[in-house]
Length: 195
Image 1 (tube, helix red, strand yellow):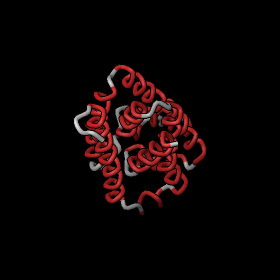
Image 2: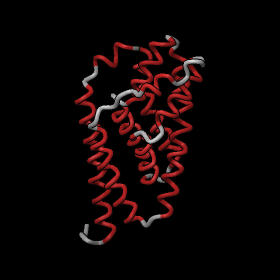
Image 3: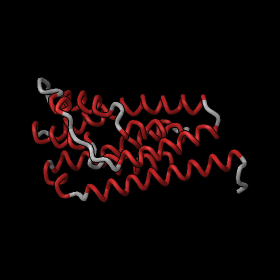
Image 4: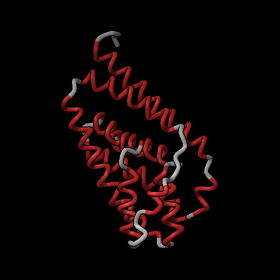
């Protein structure tokens, strides 16, 4: 259950104020048809995070458990810092899909916007940490939906009222806790400190 709950919580927090959330807001304002946009988010996120999760599983098979924990600790620490930096929606992201309907525009824009995004990186790391790939991908997708569906449904209302700085700080703290835990596991596995 942890392999589902932790990714859901982490990605939901990390996604608030992210450029894909801004993209969801833009698409909702442009098309005013929430369900095709929501389904576009679901399909794009599942595809993107499944690929990221597979990469995480492959990496976890190639590295020793101790090395993997050290890499995870460093990666989670870097994402904690990255989370504190507010995202902005690029003009290219905003222009994607203008010639398409809301579903296809959302599918294309979200898939591309997630490439190299902190939630995709987090998915790779979480899949490396938890061997239950399907649960991790479902969890990260749920996290994306928890953060983005209310924005789509409430359009401009929800995004303008959220305390984004506080939420970014909480998400960064959650990533920092994961970094500390992964470092603790690495130290414990290497026998430097006896538990």
